Image (cartoon, rainbow, N blue to C red; front, top):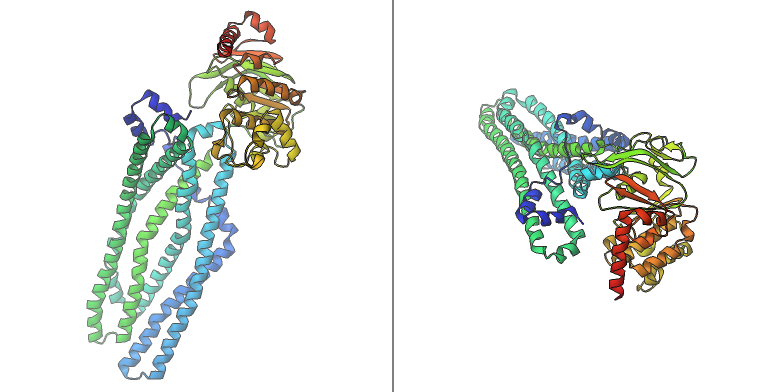
Amino acid sequence: MSSYFHFYNVSSVKEVYSSFAHGEHLKPEKNTTDRPSLKKVLSLLGPIYFRHRIRLLLGLVALLAVNFLQLTIPRILKTGVDSLSNGAATQSSLLNLAFLICGIGVVATLLRFSWRYLIIGFSRHLERDLRKKIFSHVMLMDGSFFSKYSTGSIMAHGSNDLSAVQMACGMGMVAAIDALVMSIAAVFFMLNIHVGLTLTALLPLPVLALATRFLTGSMHRRFDRVQEQFSGLTEFARSSISSIRLIKAYTLEKSQAKCFALLGRKYVDSSIRVAVIQGLLFPIATLVGSSGMLLVLYFGGRLVILESISMGDFVAFITYLYMLIWPMMAVGWVANLSQRGVTSLRRIHLLLSEKSQLLPGKEESQPKNTFFELRQLSFTYPRSKRRILENITLSLTPEILGITGPTGCGKTTLCQLLARMYPVPNQTLFFGETDVNALSVESVQKHISFVSQETMLFSNNLRENICFGRPDASMERIIHAAKAAAIHEEILSFPEGYESMIGEKGVTLSGGQRSRVALARALLCDRPILIIDDGLADVDTETEQKIMENIAPWLKDKTVIWVSQRIKQLARTDRVLVLEDGKISDIGPYDELMQHNSFLAEISRRQHLRGKHNHA
């Protein structure tokens, strides 16, 4: 059962709302004393920039060419206005200047399309490469990572955060370069016309610099909060939709909607706080530019009257100042995009900095055989104080080993450790006489088929779900595995047979059908080790018996770890191991344990009584 709904059993709805509203259950633990430097964060982008350097270089050349063409237009206007003032203008000369400006506009349009295609296109490539990097990294993580990062948080990193980085490296980078080049060039031409007038026009700029520094100082914190709340919102929506049947069963639709609305309001409030800064930056930049224009109109007009500058110089100066307004406005926009981008990139960097606690081992190392041996294996989950397994010593050779015990005794944990989902101490778990920490995770896992307690199916057809571990399997082998799992006949009853779509997590199937599809998938892989963690709990006793008979040939010469609480399943094993409080309390043949083990005797008695009651 999802952890979200557990709250409803132990807390009031208000407490649940509070937990979600503050995102306490979704935030990964952060080490605030080890915040990555900007240089380290930007190192994520270095290889991508280098890979697309030619594309970027051509885009920058096109961008600079556009800027150069724009800067020539005021010079052309100056020539035309001065010729009009001097009486030297002719219809032909003015027409030539008009055609020249039109030609420049056409060329600038083509170049503007080119830099947009090259640079904005690059930002999409960067987004793709980072998304691929995030996905590949997540695929290699162990169980500890997924207990720290929720699905919604990971999805937010791959959507909202990536979008912010893409904008910063696309339009943000373009705006920054464009603003820098245009402002330097425009100021240079303005100084060339009149130094004093230029200094007068730039007088309001310190106000913009101070305002930008003050406002962007809190942008990082506010936007980081927005991204965290978006992660919480995403995770809550994902969990609610995937558990919609449970929600309806407990009639919690309205409660969930209220909780989602509360999360939405918190997210919007935080977003508005960010928008306040954005809303101030643009008007301030416009005010500074307009103030400079006002000063130029007054003092520049006096210079024209005094004939210190020509009318053409005045028009050109006004045009250059107008061009300078865009860089002034871009300061706020670039500051906003860069702060968002850096904040999101830092979050992505922290995610990618997470290391799997599973030791990498040596890829070239291969086990001598496929036997497991446990030597005083103990295990405690990360950030937990309770020891789950303690001093487990066990040899697992080709046999069927049944594992049983009270709820919470460590059965599932043991299965997950054998499947290499969590790290183990050195010299405590051996595979093929080699310490598993000296082997690559893949070299161990490729020998194991795993039917987990929680059945996982994909939103695909039944055939693809069964052959997930062996995509190249023939249809004949798929059917053979399905028959062994006693699911073939039911698959044929579906309208499209093996091509029938089963929905997310197999929502169109019953619990027993999902279990049998998962079992067929594991059998099809035909690996030397098979771990079944209570995989037939949802199957009725009649079908259970049929499955046990069907899969007997599949289990020959294999090491099978069969976790179950059902006596009929345990009776078919070679040995039974009883776990209690994380320790082996008993182990031996089923018949022998039934003579003296109180736990086995009790569950046998209860199941026998339940069987008699059902039969009656």
